Image (cartoon, rainbow, N blue to C red; front, side, top):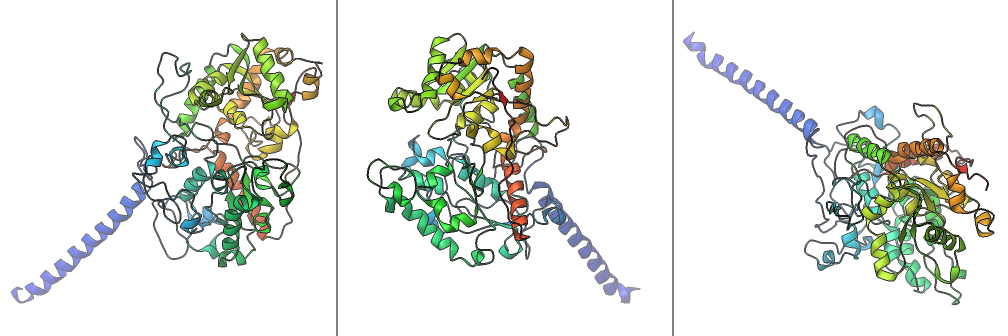
Length: 521
């Protein structure tokens, strides 16, 4: 036995070593699976710092947690089968096309609340709303919670979507394996630097140079860009100016980004589409609410449902110079003549008016205190205020068919597959502007005709729409199954690109009506 002692000792060591290695491998897999997206309860793991303090790389932001393998970059949460036909490849864009390259830690630009770097804090959501004062000086009636709400700039969607895409569960590092390719370029923020009053070369040059670079990439050659996705955080009209607009008779705003053949091949999402152009697709403006869980969404819906609404209608906005938008003048006159029935936020009076209308607490509180929220057209048909109204559970009132969600945000309307099975119930009002301007009807008169029961039914439809119009906090793994504006839009876009790759000739979705036409209009 003693002669065999070294042999048995060696066997024992080998068995013990194998057991230890197995335990270590098991622990490593369990550890990664459990924590790759952060804790499932309590404070969620923040993947990106709160105020964009880092220098932004070629892809602008740090990559999310993932486990890299050969071929597709597989997230641990979904099964590979659930990603079939849904893989996305994010292009690497050179830093010279990054309009946020100066947003580095310690830069004095962060001290300027009007600078784009300040607006892009919290991965695009903007600064956290400070707690309500409690004395009403901030315009808050106590309806807005102290968490989940941010001073989000209306043009921040490009950054928000980029961050959401970096958390997308079916990313791949192989462009050939991808269904779609996401282009992290910010045409809206780029245009904002020289929006108006510059010559055509200045306004068009940067985006033209970018499209030239993009179309020369090897990834472009496979489908000529028809599998590329991009978000442009302005209305389509700001990207459709042509040389004939530059006749020197007036100040021109915008560029020709969407008039270029390369962008015409891509699926480009804007805030407002040309409803007569089959290439255009619109997604909602970002509002101020960016939740981290389905429970947070449900809690806000309950608040909006229980809110006291002493005002019949509300409006936030200003007149246009020289009466160029007569319907807005009539809306403001209606509020002025009915101060006890209209909650009015005056956005005129220069900087003071601008600051007033940039106060999320004041704006949402007024909308949450009103039954109807008036949405006359502004510089274009769709207003961010329309989305803010949905967030506040306020029934939007439109004056132009091209402003309605049925025409602009068709993907984000009430879900026809919802559990109640009653698709098509009204959630908004459409008033003929000519009848208002010709004095045939008055705004207050029209809205007062709706019974309490009709108003309650429409408001309930609006409140149920809230999840479909918000954008989740991009920094954490969302707790729950809520589908937000990003989820809905990109499911539709991915389905569209799959059909394109199958050779289908796609037009725009069919148009029909889903608004309540105002009584007597």
